[in-house]
Length: 388
Figure 1: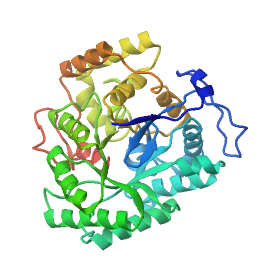
Figure 2 (figure 1 turned 135 degrees about the vertical axis):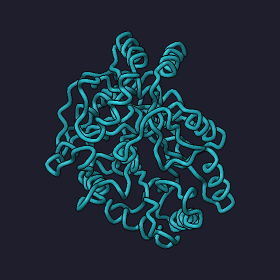
Figure 3 (figure 1 turned 180 degrees about the vertical axis):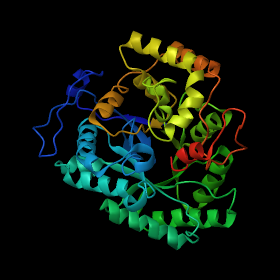
Figure 4 (figure 1 turned 90 degrees about the vertical axis):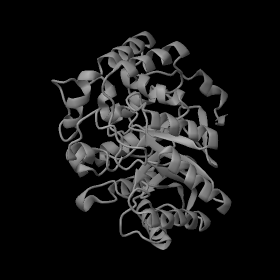
């Protein structure tokens, strides 16, 4: 994978770390100052240069799982501004992000925040990666292109950075899968997207779509899957290896295991909502991993989430942790500007393998099968992963 450096010399004197206080505002910003968390190393994703970490916006509009309320929009805009001011230019969303009357809310908010950010040059560098759901009524390439145009309208931008197929239908509707692939080709040829990607594809199906798109002149630039220290199963590592061999960038969603790798939760302190069902089953078996994360964090003067995200970056992925608050954005930014050493990587991976519980894979990911011995999967737990 290719990396580029795009930093003024002055930024080399910028300090990296966490715990700094910010006062982002929604009004026109103060004169430019070099940010404390400068993601100076840019990563190539297809034709685009993006920050080594992006931010996910699944929570922006999701009431059921993430407790979204429209009163949160001001805080979300401050969070977006903080991220952009500090060099983050990749934001991941989907046309299915939002629940009930708030369908598409994530895209609408992103579009609004981009339009209202005061520096045009910075706005122009923002890369939006959005996913188009493989709904059963999207049966033709034209219907998939129509979905892309609807996302463009919600985002109020001229071109999407990465247009992604949200999941594969190969396991239950193979003819629809080919139509959706042709839809990706059409939206690329029409200039609606700069590049195309997929989400929740296993290694075999990933290779198939790569081989399908390549002779049609459509490069597959990214593959987005659940990837973290809790998701080190054989399929996930095979996907990473496949991406490396084909020159596809792996985008890692849920790099903090839906919050289980933040160190904030215990068996007696669970999040509200459906996540508690999943946490109750997995957290008791994570002691070796959480201890290792805490030990490295203390030695590095970092936080547990920063170490967990940095592990993903060290694997060559672009993690996209979800953010809802300025404080979360500040902490996640502290994962940039440094790298775990080889001994620390081995320590974390050994601890992860010693932890008896693993994250359940997304039910939409194409793979050889779900390991039902790892965790009991209630309908509520499967729901948690249905739109990741």
